[in-house]
Amino acid sequence: MKKQTPSPSKQQKAGRRVDVAIVGAGISGLSAALFLKQKGLSVLLLEKEERPGGNIRTEEKNGFLIEYGPNSIMDTTPALHRLIEGADVADELLYAGERAQKRYILRGGRLRALPTSLPAFIKTDLFSGGAKRRLLREPFIKPYDGKEDESLAAFVVRRLGREFLDYAINPFVAGVYAGAPERLSVRHGFPKLYRLEQKYGSLIRGTIGGMRERRRSAETARDRARMFSFRHGLGQLIGALAQKLEHELVLRADIGRIDMLPGGVWLKYKHNGREETAWASQLLLTVPARAYAYLPLPSADTLTETIGRIYYPPVSMVFLGYAKVSDRVPSDGFGFLVPAREQRNILGTLWSSSIFSGRAPQGGMALTTFVGGSRQPQAARQSAEELIAMVRRELRDIMGLTEEPAEAFVKPWPRAIPQYEPGYDSFLNAMETYEKQYPRIRLGGNFRNGISVADCVKQAWQLSEELHRAVGRDNHAKN
Image (cartoon, rainbow, N blue to C red):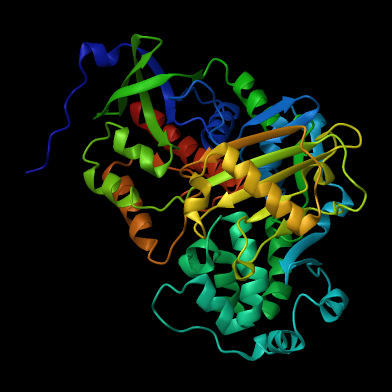
């Protein structure tokens, strides 16, 4: 017998009425809310914390600009420019300088430039002659035809060789995911690589063929995309979005009830000690996977238990600001990454003041170092004093940096970045099953379709399109 959907009570008919309610005001929720508002829909955006933005946090202190979460955005999707223009911060855009294109990898205790062209690759001492010859064989290696969800490490060793994994992919994954290639799915974590092999049979051939497709879709490859931030950091974007959404955004909102009713979703939440209610045609959730366990969603035990197993490793950010440093200290570039084989205690360091202007006082230097991740989770759990001392020792050994920092800040992220591990299908299937069961609920965020800020904004745009159509169908049905 089909379960009867209860009719709304008088209380449920009262309260705020909107087209879309969004739970979670990180970059995904903020972006979706702005896109929906631009489409003429009414929106309610609920956030449990007292500030929006999620992991994006910026602070300016004594001439230094500190990014506690993401430091930059890669300009890979047109959705970013829709967001920036909608937030009225296009005039505040700050693109990385030319020297930020230089990136370094630690090998044998020495920083070596990552080659960005064929001539540079031929000349580099980052890879051995054997590794270079092995890479040239890539177009002739057969595609993977196995049914198992292959790890990124297995994929890279099979196509490019062990040395390329150790000194290119391993440090890259530590820098982007705070992860380990052995624990990441190539299909889910790096879908573009996976599709290149599946479609073209080769990464090299696919890279050439993929250029034409990106031109048609207006997308930009990550390695060719420009990097940007804002004059006052990424927090400036969050502040601008919050201002644009001042009538839609409710902070310190503790949701106590979510009911599915004919024609919509009813929510009860506490705000500043008062109980509030809202009625929405559609509901979008953009909270971290672990937060689902605390939401009063209908029949969500299987969903919350399943996605609650998504691994988020701990990462600690250590910021060191120097009033002045020796000319001998390297700073001409984006920064450096550390392969696991080097057996150091850090994942890598951004030379923040070399990437963007205005990050340190004149003549000073700002450095952002990351510790922990899947590689060394225990290292991220040290005290702030231990982390600062350890990072200073590492930078002294690697960069020859002996000066005393004028400023030092630590931000621990106990659960930093979702890891798209082999077998991630089980999580995606649980989400899709729940959405089919409750068509008025959609699940978004960085544990689905990509972890970067650009991925989240692109997904928010796509969800706003879906929600706009869904609300249109609802309105048509009412008429």
